[in-house]
Length: 381
Image 1 (cartoon, rainbow, N blue to C red):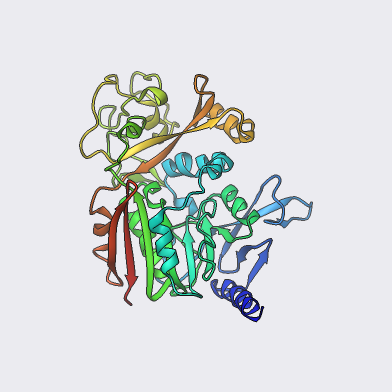
Image 2 (image 1 turned 30 degrees about the horizontal axis):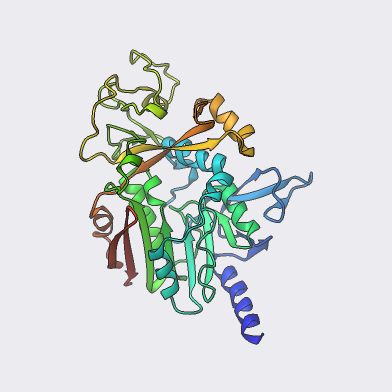
């Protein structure tokens, strides 16, 4: 009994100390004073997770900007590329309950990593999703964050310590955690600089000697039939984002999409697009006339479909809106709303190359597991 009380006391202390300013814990969701600018978003049916405004409406506090240290850049949610907003953030917000229902099995390598941590370790899960790894090791303390408020609500309802935050601006003190994990997150970031920044943040928030586990989808997928259902982006985005995050489109031939039957759309013809139309829409709408063309050997950019069954409750809300706005499509044959999720799948050695220029961490392990490339870093400074 004394041990449990002592652990609970330390857990509360650690949760408060993780942030720069005093943290208010409401319904087991941490809302921190570290965040300089807060944006309140009303979410229906959220209880325990939210604060109440003057009219009694439930609200979730989301971090938009968090200068966690002098070395931390001003990157925030507002600077997120449009392709990530539309084909990652909006998608997971819309499919959160269905997505969560499919995410319960623990990957053995991740489970082994968490189980190997010393008792009393504080583990920070960046991009925690539905929280399936939070609390996996009962002898460790877990804190999670994710960009999706609906997924964070699911975590909170399960009793986890979580908050909504951007993986590129983690709202935690420098050198605070004993370990950090990023499971299937980096492949949703659309430029190399953003992927590198996310890794730098994971390293920053752990103490010297702390470990960081990162897993990403691999180009070398074991299930080739699965890859055939993905829509390849035949022009690699690289660093071609301009303004707040839109990709530069030079010509129809340089940025076409190869057509995959279950996600194919009609060719929109000429390149005379309305000047107000976003380049992401142009990317999404221009499909190749040659559906039989094979993807190139070095293909790494894809739209990966998510089929949300018509019978799911969320279809009547966010999904109906997404279909109306052209961000999703109905597939009556499958009885589902089909969303496209943006992925940059990693080639062998790519994770290592991203870390190679960082002088505050070394790679202590690397492996391939269930079509994922994985590395373990140790913070050295």
